[in-house]
Image (tube, rainbow, N blue to C red; front, side):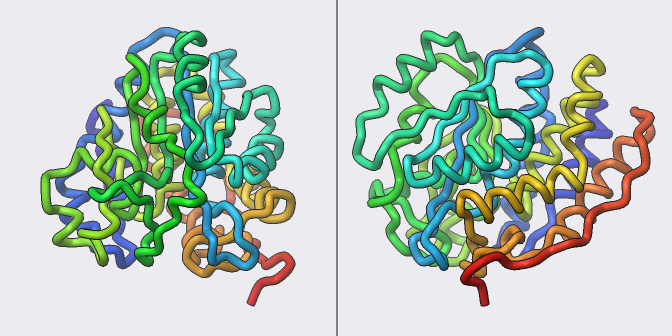
Length: 316
């Protein structure tokens, strides 16, 4: 099983120009650790943290990477009857709700707080819910100076709630998925790695660690991979996970975010049905590779990856 999951991890360890090669090397086995953490409990209670606001977006909005993958995870956990909650910034709430609705996970509660709002009450609520694992996916985290910055080095602290305190605010195990060095969980990396390898690394590198860190060329791929790994480790979860690894559903989730959130691409800044400036067909090619890597273990239906992509509203 571990060899198969390691093979899935190798598919998502594809650098897209962010200087992540040595970070991928340092985090090999992270997918295995994360999946084992989730699969070890018969019926885990799961919290999801996501949302990365793009103040320079057209319009300013949450980015598509993060909430889309979180929605696929939420759909899976919810369909299994597992307790699941999602937390985000107030400014990212509408995009997360649109993603959850399109994914068919409308019963998953969304907790949102504003920047500079004390997250203690929310942490207490999650503790009272008995959550035992919290997953952060493409969630901005503070750097060494306490500021939240995007990949351009822009300080977005005015838009970022202190969900890093929620992430580390309970007895739960923590899993993080990131792709650029400035996300929650990257504090687990060896000192100096983000600073030395990632553009603007000394400025943007997140200092918050996680128990398990999954890295990927695009964080959305990390969500794919985590679902696939769970399908391998937990046969009783496999059908639910595989139903979420569907390109048509995936496209619909991102499309709904962009249309109804709204949401924007974090790289191009456009209101388009893309993630990190790549059309969904590119992401679905990665998804197809992940499904192929699972074939020896699971009898999967063949699916043609979606290829549509278009812009909505003010996109150039």
